[in-house]
Length: 132
Image 1 (tube, rainbow, N blue to C red):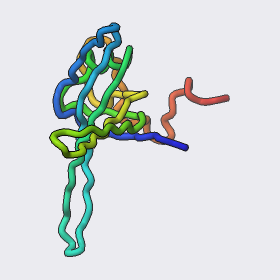
Image 2 (spheres, rainbow, N blue to C red):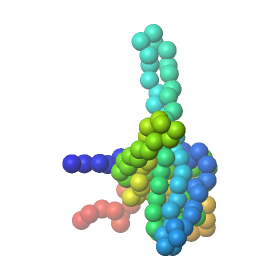
Image 3 (cartoon, one colour):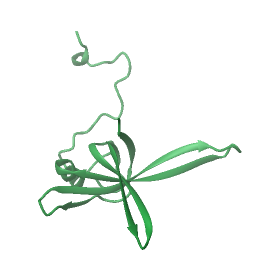
Image 4 (spheres, rainbow, N blue to C red):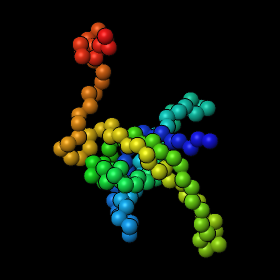
């Protein structure tokens, strides 16, 4: 069975970095993804979905240090559900437990390597990238 999620979205707020009693780092943040579609009447519609992300360990510390509100990120992980009862009503929540995070727009910190905004034009491949 497979439980994999891939999301690309913008952070809604700075991550909250905390440590458990045993010293494990945990970062929590939300990202927004947008879906653009045309409805039956031909009107362009946009829908935003918010996803709760949880990162643990070294990844949590990296998220806390380099991510901030508005930044575009790639998240890969798995869905984790939780249920509980509150005042007689059954409640549900769903989190994405991140295994991988990649910054797609500038993050905080001087050590972040800049990524080229686009690949080199065809016919202008650097000589070092030629496989033979």
